[in-house]
Length: 218
Image 1 (cartoon, one colour):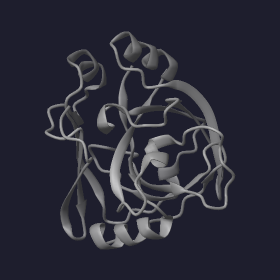
Image 2 (cartoon, helix red, strand yellow):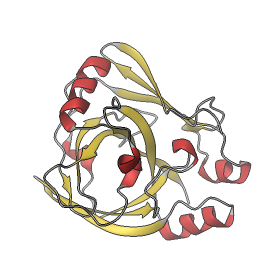
Image 3 (cartoon, helix red, strand yellow):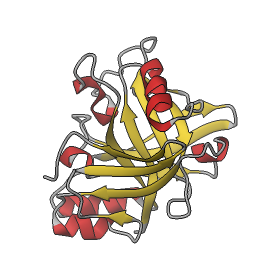
């Protein structure tokens, strides 16, 4: 049940605010994204692939003001964000094969990442389709340390449509997960002894940039 870093999630009030944050903090303009009919959200994306984390990207996500209510809690805790909160790192998503099996293994160790749900969005290159674990409350688990689990369907992946932009994922470190869960998720590329629930270091045109979730090590 090997996993890798698929993407890290920065939540914003609006995509415009998220794009300003990206320019100010990372020194680059985010690339295009799309709309998520299942959740009433939309995003912009940034290729952050690196030798240690091939295929990784950064997602800036916000509630889509033009979309109807999804009738359920939106992912990544977007419904619980205080009004006017600045864009911030909130979560990460791990790419896996056999998402249902790994989700069950996590539940057996005491942390429930949610039920695998199949969804999709349209892109200029075609339909992107994936299965992602979703919790009923929509909130990142363990302060963002416990990832959502994603399994992509087909060969199409967002990073294949994003040009390199001079930003690379240097490291991703999680903190405070139970030993069994940390061992299950651990890989040579994912650290498990962080002071914060989730810390991400990016190599950018502005130098090394460190992002942290609001939650410290749990």
